[in-house]
Image (cartoon, rainbow, N blue to C red; front, side, top):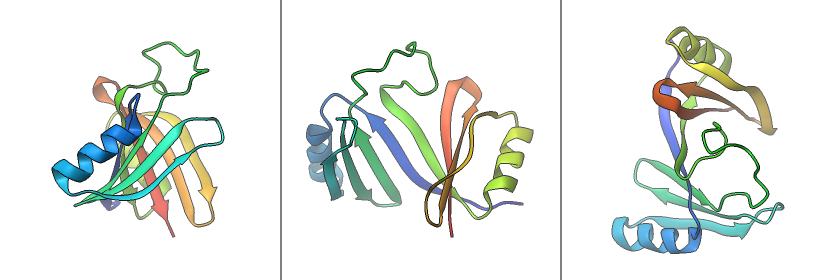
Length: 129
């Protein structure tokens, strides 16, 4: 059976800097980065006990419907680290998950995939080798 570890929670909010400050003050999170993405969104990454938190603004040009798996406010998705991406995807699909984005290499040694869990919850699987 594939091993899973909690990796990150991804939030979409109007003011990532304000949310970052809150998590630092309230929970002792450490800011890893705060920068502007090529598409103009602001993105923050925090380290917090037990994992990471990624916070960014929504895309200003987004024309998808509000119930699209890719358009979320508040909790956008959460990520689970896995030791073997393909077997993890098979296991999740066997449990009822619907594939949203298949295995994709995002940088050397890092592959991700997304699926929709029950109740319209988006989950990212992250394989780091």
